[in-house]
Length: 119
Picture 1: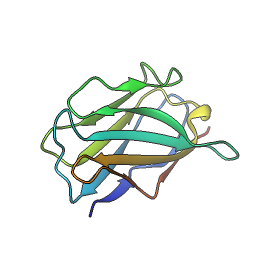
Picture 2 (picture 1 turned 135 degrees about the vertical axis):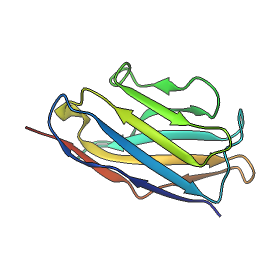
Picture 3 (picture 1 turned 180 degrees about the vertical axis):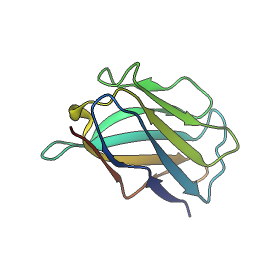
């Protein structure tokens, strides 16, 4: 059973940076097989995909974060980082990590971590 836990959220000012960490216990990422992703959900909005892809391959990024955010997940590891630069108030949301385990063909979600960008 895979358990996903996010951390690293907080309150930052516009223009600052923040790194979110997602630890997926019970899995070891296999290259070209397992998939990881970060989603976010702002108040009153639907959950949206921010970035994601197959471990070991080039990830996809939403236009709103392209050039500012980067996802990092190593083959053989179990941690997914989301590095966020030049944050704006529009990035304020609860950020969720999702891991797809190829061994049981299931998605696993974390509980979310709040990111607030405000001056």
